[in-house]
Image 1 (cartoon, rainbow, N blue to C red):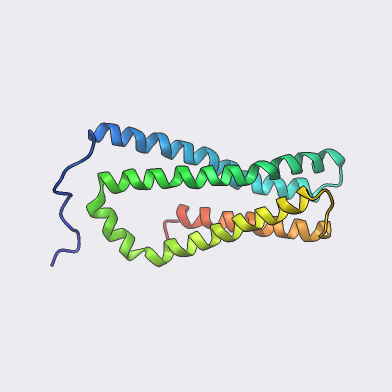
Image 2 (cartoon, rainbow, N blue to C red):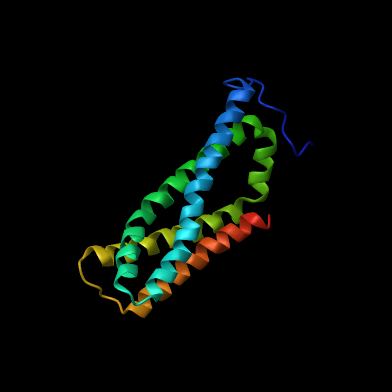
Amino acid sequence: MNLIPSPDPLGLPAPAWFILLLLIVTQVLHFVFMNFVLGGSWFLVWLMAGKEAWKGRLAARCLNMMPVCLSLAITFGVAPLLFVQVLYGHFFYVSNILLGWYWLGLLALVMIAFYSIYILKAEGDTGYRVAHPLVRLTLQVVIALLFTTVAMAFTTNA
């Protein structure tokens, strides 16, 4: 029994160079939004830790953009996976089976961070702060640590 299945017998739906081009373009777009989310989460920690009024205004603006940028990072992160599946499906299938629980764990971390961002954003949209600033800062640190954990998991190729 061969662990790696044979390539798709129907062939590719488009020329390989075109699929590879789309893979690279969507991966670059994913990197742009992913870097904003990761760097922006730590930037928000720095802004929320400050006492100056301008830091509070800038933190509110960044926090309003964070859910949209995270959504775009996720969307542009799925597209390269689909192109990899088309180009290297016979290898990608096996790797997904072997790493399925690992991927689901990372997905859970991103979901927790995503909902936590909405908690912080929703509290700011009401016009008044329900939680103490230290609680908000702690939640933002947790969000930044969750995104850093996901980034480290992909970087270390665990």
